[in-house]
Length: 509
Image: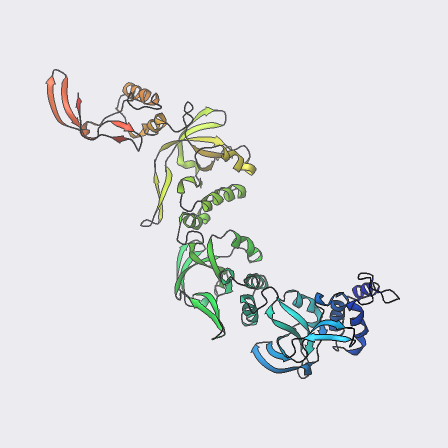
């Protein structure tokens, strides 16, 4: 700090002209002349005040000053280490060339007094202060050094949410400096929008804690979330008392910003399990966007139950799942390789296979799991050439279900809808093909003949044959030798919707 002061002093030439202002009316000259007329009794504090004054070429640069304690009156305790008082003189506003002294404003103004915890490192305390700081004083009885602050927020010009939060910093601790700092930063950023501020939530304010999945629990929160500051009660007003919240373990308290960044729920705060010492996020169980438990939330709860073994691929799949709140068809999933069978080579790096599980279609609130359709469906497998740039490879694919990995080659593979090469879409022929495993005539030649007609029916279905179960025929009547009439319960196929049909249709046998 000495070198900084000496450097600033060099800006004043022997003729008392400031090199920056090119004037003999510069404020720092006025401040400098007065250095001999005051002292805090502490070299570090004297140097800090002088440095701010020597940097203030214009008075609006907010230089600090030494404020005698007897210039403060009606001192009242607010919280631990924080007081309110009236300042007789008021703050400096400009230099009077007539009176040869500083002119002041706001005489007898209300100021906030805050104890300096470490006079050896006061620059750090001033750095985090969100109020305008006028100067420093000292309590003659306790010998404590004290910041003299405007009680309003610098940004808002009033006592905002950030100020109310700041006044309460001394009343709680997580026991972890990184977590304290993270919570305090969110609170000091919440000038008008209290919803974005986190808070430290004592663990004994949670009850009826129930396990959901690994590292995830549900509980009731006695207090409920903050909604606004009450000027009557001088405290936060809360809502949703005894609300259900989700509890999720923090994996790395050293890098909590990253964990919060990917969170799609409203986060209320952080708590700590007193037995395990784990730090835990306290979340609204609903999605921030949907205001309910949507598909993205169900996917997120399952992240701990699978891994591709590759961080880039995990991230890509998870991002797709967190992006589709209502449309489950577009989300990818990790597909275990042993869920694929009858794998056949088509072209270089391309195969087809049957997928045992079939694709996700909706979430079952009864079973608490995903419901699936198209079990044993045919899918196309296409090798991922560059797992570092998978977004580009998926960009040109019409319908992708997920990613898998060949355990032998270690290649990562896209699992895609099996498109028709002729139509470049999922046509009737593909839909027929997906169903080949669900029927047989018991005769290979007949199976082959029916399948060939179906594989030729790309756009129309009139020429496609199907295998018709005998129990789907009723009211069978003899007509002539080897000829019968019957009613066909299902009726014939006429379009794809898991193939629609005309029911109870008369046919000739």
